Image (tube, rainbow, N blue to C red; front, side):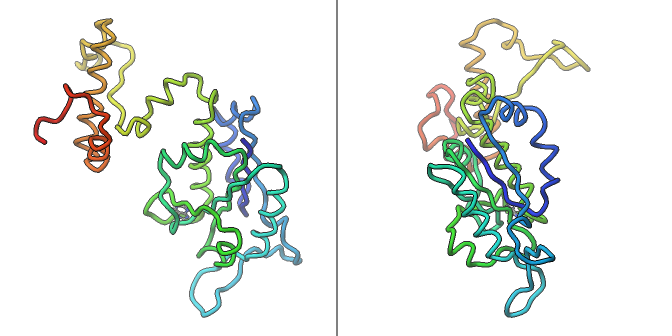
Length: 242
Ligand code: ADE
């Protein structure tokens, strides 16, 4: 997968993309990630990427020309189809299923929205997939772009060592994760549940599912309802109150 990111804050991406799984994915060639300075597509002396809005009002608006020309240039870098994303609080909500859908794309271009937003003609012309990472407003689209890249790259087959580990993720199953433990068996008067030390894998699987269901029911009734409606729940673990 190739990912191109267009931003005026290139340096922000150095840390997150140069560590851990994202670093390994790039070294192995599973993900090719390029961060581009939008100013490289400006034509004026000051490399202007934004301006005041028509009609008045606070906040600068990102210019249409650099975003559109840069996107068109980057599209031509690959032969196949390109999926263009725009990070914006006005977008559709980013979820694990959106991440799964995006992780199958060959070429993704992410436009980082900034300031008060982008000129509407960027949206009209490029028709990007507008994505919000949550119902809150950040200072810009760079952190959302990092979140999106992290979530989709780890889903590329082979990037996370164990396929099982990705399939067991919270949300992939429709449930939050169950509690997990490691050594020592007892600490500060708190012990690992006996079932996890029993060696009985069927029992362990059942306990984990029950815990995940219980956790989801209490913390995220919205997710739990969807999970129940999907019919995935095992009969023995069904909620007796409903
Ligand atoms: N830009 C500012 N806030 C954002 C959000 N919540 N999601 C995506 N882009 C943003």
